[in-house]
Length: 271
Length: 271
Image 1 (cartoon, helix red, strand yellow):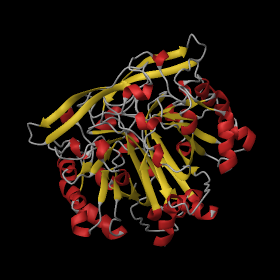
Image 2 (cartoon, rainbow over the protein chains, first blue to last red; image 1 turned 135 degrees about the horizontal axis):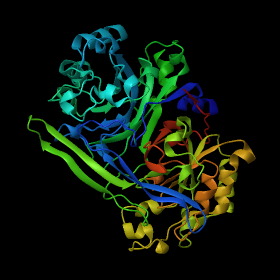
Image 3 (cartoon, chains in turn cyan, brown; image 1 turned 45 degrees about the vertical axis):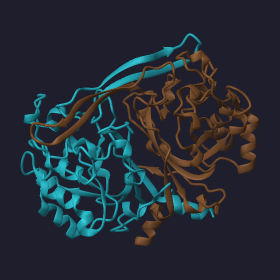
Image 4 (cartoon, rainbow over the protein chains, first blue to last red; image 1 turned 180 degrees about the vertical axis):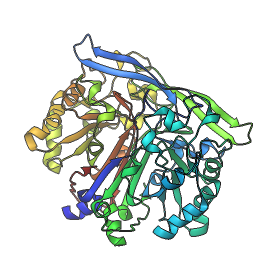
């Protein structure tokens, strides 16, 4: 019986990986937004003799590693608190576009790039969360290198992103293949669309299908291209257009050691 | 191979439960703290023709369903961003104190109550997160009933909580039984200590052992007393004393249907 449960929870052979940057004054924020502020409400030993620390915080919803709810770019889209909990757990795949990103400023993952990946790895599992590894994550702690400018001018931003065509393949995957894409992004960049975008078509196309996006993802170099399961838990702002989220990846020892090539999972039920 | 991974991720027979309330103007906050504020930074159709919504938010770290980091009540305790990711996943148990809570204002779970539970269910598994079901969760959406006062006067608060003695059993569990308690609380109340506490001994005792607490937990009536696994993912405030968190419980169909009585899990490794 215990063995059955060990297998059920799958923890005996799982490795955990945190894909989230911290949230604070040192966090990256899209250049068009306000910054982070924190003030101490309690700090120090209280009159009654015990230690107490508690802060007030103020920040834009889209700070650090965060989820964009569909409502961010689609008037009728789900707000962050209304995304069903079962849409926040699923198998993860990583599409690597480091080679493409090295070719030009504002490089876009093309439909050809994405189709090549699908030919190599096979079709996407149902309920997948798609991550895009651009290599920009290595620049995260260097504000100027990460945004491509040392100014606050959003028109000067330079970073890779997803093309409209690649976004459309993922947005329409359920209609064309009968398998839902829950989330896209998982980009290690400041935004899903490339830095020079002014109309954000990838955001729009995915939002219209109630697919969430994730930006400023950490540790993508440690996430295998296939074989991990992710739990994406954003702060549940009432009516929010998004919010900082923690992303936990579970990687089985078999996948980590390369003994299983192409895993798949089915979706859990909701209570 | 696919079957192995199905078993690994365990999702084919899992039910998911969200133990988190949303975060907004309608959230419960300890009476001594400031409130929640939200302002629209973008709201509506932009000049370029697309819809965009994004908010700025301001609130105390300890709002709605949230994690208290050890540093909240212990100067040398872990801050919320430094809690190891593997300490945020573990088996859950629920200690029910509804009967005790019905006997008096500010009822405390006693050492006898806790020991009776342990005699009935057996010892705690390693890496456990302990939830306390008081029944107060049914009052969450009624501010006055939940806090026991319609004022903002913290000295008038009335709600059940954990006694110092019960907190000490859990804080010392690793030393006495060789099994770590990761988190305690999981209370469906405004605070871990009862409403009339002025020195918060349960907070202090657990914080000193770097055990986190969770407050304002949702849906505890749906969490089985044993047999669930929880993932507790707080917002990762740099140096934070805590933060709103999402708590995802996975409940196997076997547990949900009562076919397995006392599961256990071991801890995953960290990457």
